Amino acid sequence: MQQVTLSAAFDSFDEQWAPRVAAELNGQAVKLAKVEGEFVWHSHDDADELFLVVTGELDVEFRDRDTATLAEGDLLVVPAGVEHRPVADDEAEVLLFEPAETRNTGNVETERTRTDLERVD
Image (cartoon, rainbow, N blue to C red; front, side):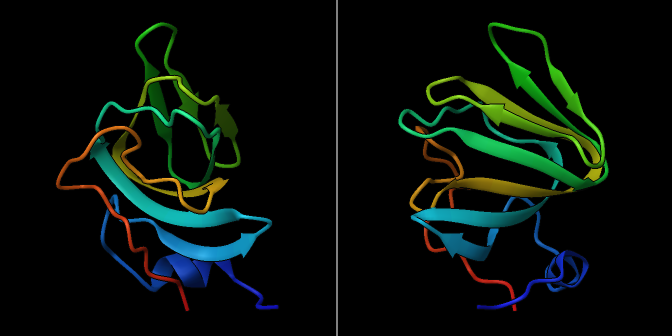
């Protein structure tokens, strides 16, 4: 067991769109990411993805429905197979919860794809 203080964990890195693993349980991972600007359009074919905004504001855009705007403390589950694109006008700190093997860019490969995630201290 390891206690994680979210504020300290977010303070331990600066890189944006590069999730860090904060904890794992039952094949799932709790990931932390700092985000700003637009991410890539993608989907996760076999996994739901939970976004929880810790600080800032995050828009999650969809091709087939209205954009979801998440403020601090808001969460959203994007169902498996739904194409989406996270966007943050200013830096936001986001907690993600998804199967541990889920790739951050889902079904696409880009320069932002991360496969071997660092752990927060």
